[in-house]
Length: 309
Image 1 (spheres, helix red, strand yellow):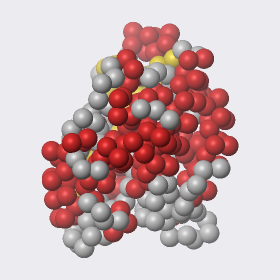
Image 2 (cartoon, rainbow, N blue to C red; image 1 turned 135 degrees about the horizontal axis):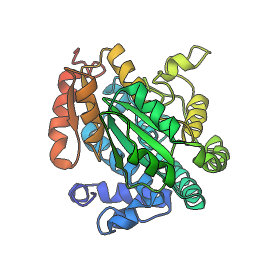
Image 3 (cartoon, rainbow, N blue to C red; image 1 turned 90 degrees about the vertical axis):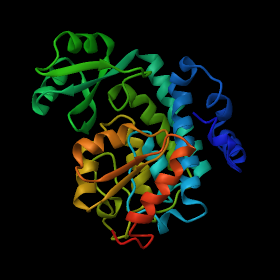
């Protein structure tokens, strides 16, 4: 996933800095590691955030994100990358912080075997009822007819054997039941690390996974884009709490967003947007070949950059 990016000037140095921050060889993991190695969430999380931020800097081409981005959000681990877009974390700081999150979550997953399954289709209320009845949690409520159930492996098997009407249950290749009480030990371990991390207040609208709200609305002191302490608090809670991507998408619609740019490794969120945010133009960045289309999208839609759309 990183090989084509490494052909671009400056990317090798950037990834080397990210690897030092994460205390892992991101270049090796992004070029030669096998699927089983990358499936380890301790590897996958910093690799995903690093990929996103490499793509971001190539697309911005030296411009400040606050001069280009009208609103940012991230799904699950992607919220750490979104925090860097918003200026809460610098790029290396985001990769370094997510590496702690990843290690704590990997330890929690190893202590109590668990997993996740996507539930696609069906009546939304019936799906949530079936997930609860199986002893599981709706870890990701994604909108577009997709909910991710998480919990004990035997309970996931029960859900698969008795799926909700008109729904499919698809097991996911993940290390554990993220965003559920299975991750409580990880949340507790991450809290003091995050609280001591070097952070700044958001510099542009940034949506929270918890409820889709911009941090500017969450902060009661009236800061334009919210406070760093609120971001840290919610990023910490997010480890063991559901991702409400459906509500993030509702807020994007409310704000009048006309285009969505999904950073590398892109594809899933733009797919959800096409089903939920009809008429919103999307570009998913999967490789450097997509950078030109991403810049064109920004040029035509970014209010911050003066496009006025």
